[in-house]
Image (cartoon, each protein chain N blue to C red):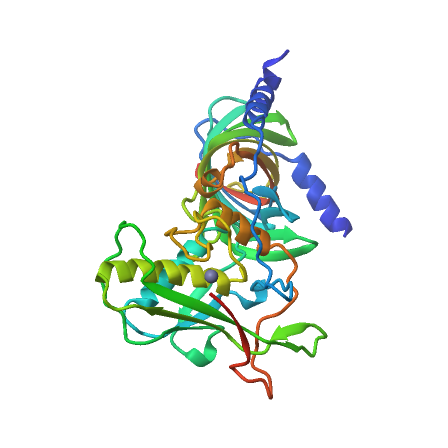
Length: 202
Length: 231
Ligand SMILES: [Zn+2]
């Protein structure tokens, strides 16, 4: 346990400075929590949300100054959408969510970075039979903005290990909800975290 | 303020703007009665029974009318409360659908004014005690439809499609009728598809605790039991 703690503190405190022109390829592996996609009251209070999802992301970035880096990231997350009602959960359908973002990362201190991200989220319901669900007419595409924090520690000249925590937000509504009379969209919050590995191309 | 905080502040502002739209929920009308008259029974298919399996007699376009009706009813839900599936093995079915009499003439569905040149009935099985302590149907639900000769094929097809969808509404658990002729579940259905009130009613039904469970094969349990007909 002490070894693990020291390794983790080492990760936090040993962020690697990056050189201009360097290209970093990163892989995130972790979990994602998503807030409710829909809330309703039909006899009982109902909430619908994706279950805690495994997530994988691939990113490519490069420094543009001594402190800033830009990059692009594609994130995949997959879990079942569940309906929560009367203290029970019912599976609605499997759901994959793709997120593509452009990121701007800033080195705050020598122990880590913060980043901002803007991009788009694409919902991809995984079932052929979604006619009784809020995805019956479409699979929404929504704009998203997010913030994140990362810690890194080089483990070799080309390889770096890290940890990340990220938050993003977007507006969610489907044609089926609109057709049913819903006027607004729901703000959906997502929090993800996990470990990262980076490979330096130069 | 230093440039150091420019990025976080810009993003926080963007997120605050993104989060400021208020959510809303779908509109619903007051539902009509769905309980079985006389017994006040509430029935709907539980999640554990999904997809509900329908066996359909291959008579004319009856299988297509059932498929069409099932898709129409499924589309009334938003949260995965019901799914129906047509199966080829009647022994594995939850609901049996029959065409009484000769196979009907086949014709494309049209938007012609509705004529009542066909009828249907849904047979709701008697109840029996379940070992779990609850109550369960003593047999499968059954839907019968029939048509009258001497009318245009398109009128018969329109009527059968409409009445089959109406009877499927009963098979889903609406064991009563709407008093509004604009609803598919009006006693003599003219509406070609579920209305907003039909939609509201089926949604409320599927979130109301059921008093009775569907039939499952059990030793000594007949597949066909005494029934209550709902026209
Ligand atoms: Zn009826």
